Length: 363
Image (cartoon, rainbow, N blue to C red; front, side):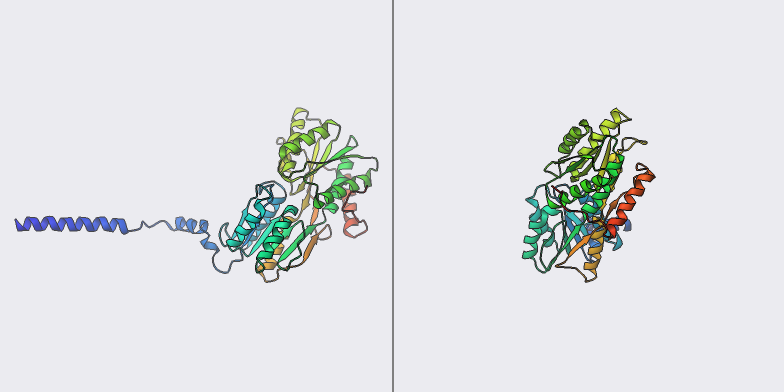
């Protein structure tokens, strides 16, 4: 009887030990799975990494234009230094309204990113305020200037690249009517318009140019409505400088091209190469060219300078044709050789300083 009781007690103890052992043991995961977990948590970014992040304006990171180009620059920097997206590496925050700018900048500062970019003219006040509150942190502002030792301001001579877009538009127009669709009426967009008008008039003084500001960078519907009005009035080439609003210009052009494959309808993209945005089908595309703005190149350049202890705080860096900061994208054959020759001649003259392109439209 005693032996039977002892056996029952021993069995109970062994069973309890097994249960406790099962609860306390951790299941071993494959090495690859562990690696993926570490990367997603940002563990791979620890150590001597110089982290970089950015805040978009309301156009969003996938605007296929300005913000997207900046994010591509941040990603390129991250790839160069083997940084993952997340804490201690690279990242971005997207702004839905103007009220998000300061909040997002402060959020990235609290997360201890070494360099924070504010993307767009509209973010100037927010960058200035947050930089003043955080003098030990480094900031970069694209398309506007802030006078502070911990901020580098980055400007582009958009008017020079837009001049070439104007030459292309005027030479390719069959109707003698071209259009400019801008986003918000601010200095940087004024430079696009001024250059476009000057370039077009340089090759055709009688060209008719319609210009319209939509008042937004994130309203594709407004871009579409404006393009519809212009194309309906006889305009056959539209240059947009409107961020995500410009996506509506492409939508209108593609719809017209689908309806009438013989229609002479073109769009000139902005900031990034927007060839894919103009794709109607495998054989048809309404993108004549795009005025490239080297935001991505500038982001990589400044990020590396800051990483190497050469942060150009308190300075304004300006990129134009001479610095390869602006240019036209490959037209993929849409622009004939004789027209391209004319464009290249003007490009050389501007780069050499023989032609000074105004920043505002002449009254």
